[in-house]
Length: 540
Image 1 (cartoon, rainbow, N blue to C red):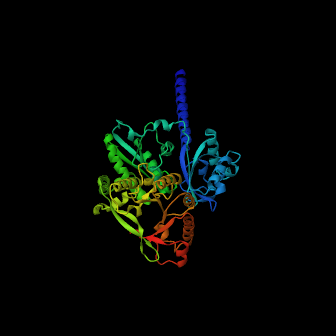
Image 2 (image 1 turned 45 degrees about the horizontal axis):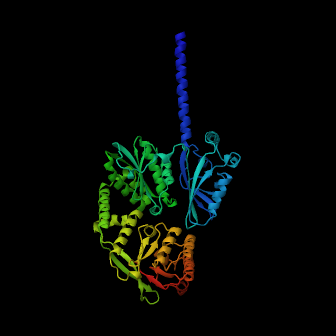
Image 3 (image 1 turned 45 degrees about the vertical axis):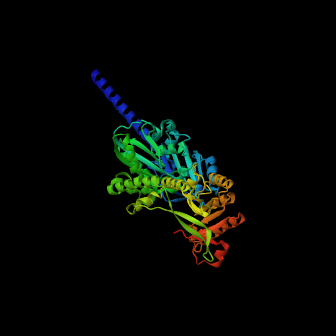
């Protein structure tokens, strides 16, 4: 009997142990389900409404995901209902951002409303939702969320709410850019590659460590196990593959991001794939594959799934050709010693007589069988920057006839490089913005420096908004070129015409000459008069 009792006690102890272990596992899983995540949304503040851009998370990951609330994917809710999720201090900060018309990026800590303020929302919760919410608030009292809002020139606001409850992990102490580290080692095996093409903004501004940390948090990277590299406008992480589920999670997240890169000042594209590595020398091959994936996603984000995961390797000949052409493209521009220039004369609009000024265009003589990939490479901000910088260096040693009356289009990113210096024996820079956003302080400082050296700067405008009007009022310019995206449509779009007149009025006050690119010749006399259409050129 005593022996039986001993066995019974052991069995009961084992059952209790297993039950406690299972309970802890469930509790951890419950805790972890809401420990990190991301919600994308867009605010149409003119119509006072908010639309969610990604799907809800299962099991009430946050109060934004309650089953019977209106914050569904592609469903509008009022701005006031959206603000009701947050405490008063956070509400006030969000409203201050929405009431500000400047194009900008905002980051703030956000806190949800407390139980007293939750009364209206809780009425929409199911019984299960309420139980989970109560349990969750006990576990994670005063949990902090991170809110980012990016406004654009059209008056739209794109937002991101993200959170990570494992804040005790000091990512900044763990992550290290191994591109600059010598003699690092990589164990052979299967790896997951997670890569990001950075926006052209980061060609002139250093990427903040918080941005890298945010990427790590978004994809639940373990800073003690994953390695990251930052090179050629690309950040990528290497993670030793341990489960198939991980790549599926990363792929789903990458697809969401690629659909919504227009709301990110940080990213142009995201890629995920699996590869086998034997040594550190495989890094070069990984970077080529990563560029093949990211460049094609940038070129056609709607087809991003073709360049992610296993599908990335479905066209081995296309991949081989890409790598071959990329090597050739870099070789041609690194070894180039002369550039071919075509001059498009700036003409009088009334009589087509040429002026002294011309807009120069660099003509590249690319191999015919590589044209498709070369045209793709020219769309990539990092490569475009390298080509433009290289061309200008060559032009310094190349005697250009009448350079003082020649204008050459370059990106703001090239113009703002420390090593880029305009000179009186070089063409006048015609500065355009890759992302249609002029860095007013930096650009203005560089323009002022040029003027002190008696070197004029011209600005290429492809979109008119409030921020541009502010910049034009502040900057000292000689010439403004109104790009073909505007010039070719002012006779069809009345709002665009009125915007154009606003620019013209500022130009008249500041004695800035206006030149139009590819404008229609058969214009209404009133348009010609109001828009001051006196000079133009044909870009082809």
